[in-house]
Image (cartoon, rainbow, N blue to C red):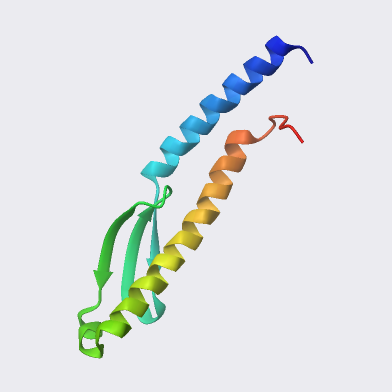
Length: 99
């Protein structure tokens, strides 16, 4: 494989990855704590866009609120990871990557 071909492939891959990252920033997932006590909206780039806490949780104290928020963030991150894997796999599909 010649250098010109490699450079063209690298440029194409860079363009596809940039487009995939743009797509991810526009996607949103919702992380939900057990019982729906907290819902976190997160982009495909891990930016937290919203946090909704069920008012019934307020009476359970700060530790319960912290636990619910943490659970919702973890759920959102896991969902974002899955979307990121899918989008990036599509972006790099068919591209020969170095081993």
